[in-house]
Image (cartoon, rainbow, N blue to C red):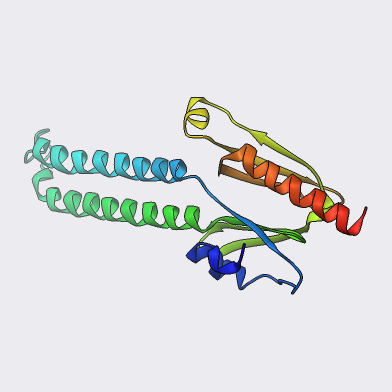
Length: 193
């Protein structure tokens, strides 16, 4: 597998890591599209609720229903503007969440595993682990959707002080685990313990 066979984001990420001449690219692990669908559904649901509020609440307001002398009708335009602003912010936040979700990637080579996780737009974590330091690879598939759409959580347990690698919404998690274990075994044959 060559670096050119990576996705666009994978190629951009690949330029950030150290890659030796004799090192072979084994695979790229991206997040399953089902998680992206959940992000879009959540953003759409919040936007619809806000649009309903935008449509219903101003219609319910009449001028001074309580007889207190407050002109609630004049607040309609403010409420419409605030509701519209909240809908726009929800759409922007959904787009940012989708971008961050799509930017998470794990690259497996014959020498190492590199994980790039975006927590926020300005908080990116890149971790590299020697493939020889892999102790165990665990797959967890919880829930009916994980089984129907074939995704799961991949946990790579490491030797030493480094934290375990956890990658959620991994597509084809059992095949991905086999890929990592196979690379680990090849590395052990080549370099020993």
